[in-house]
Image (cartoon, rainbow, N blue to C red; front, top):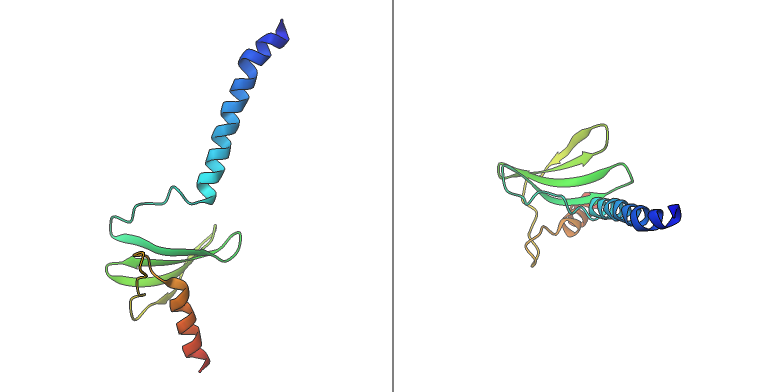
Length: 107
């Protein structure tokens, strides 16, 4: 009798809670909760450097900045003198731009 009650009530409840947790983890991993880019601050690109730090290219008032974001702090690393070119998909081609900057510094 008690086992029937557990099977009818307990297992679906555990399944629903598990599904909510899995969807929450997936949403965080895939960054599904990011804003749409409307407003004064737009995140143009984001690249994880480690588990705790990521680099973000943001645009504020028409000016682009490279910042590092961690759990404890946010630092402005560089203010870009020119805009990062857009790729065919309409998103910045951040990796190609960084490679060009690094190759300029090596020369």
